[in-house]
Image 1 (spheres, rainbow, N blue to C red):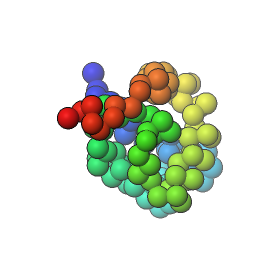
Image 2: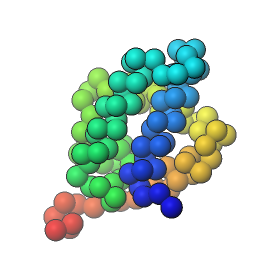
Image 3: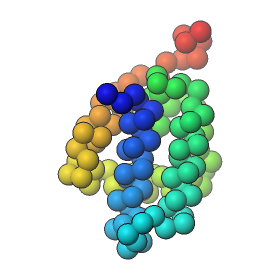
Amino acid sequence: MKNRLERERETVKNMISIYCRLNHKSSSLCNECQELMYYADARLANCPYESDKPACNQCPIHCYRQIEREKIKVVMRFSGPKMIFRHPYLAIMHLIDRKHEPVKQSEKE
């Protein structure tokens, strides 16, 4: 069983991969999508919530810069519906994780 952050990393990686393959017609990630994946991975690695991380759209801390936030929104809107067919476990777990309430930093201490 993977922890929450590992699943999130895998989900984002697969969403970016789907987006790049179908939009940029590339068998491997193009430079722009590779950079977005590195950026997302770095943000996840530094998440202050760690395994208690809520879904990004419900997180009180927006750690993505505006440009990357817009890019990942486009990727997720495009790839999200396709995830249920290509990666059903990750898609379902992502929907479940969206119901996870963010833990306030004062409650963690």
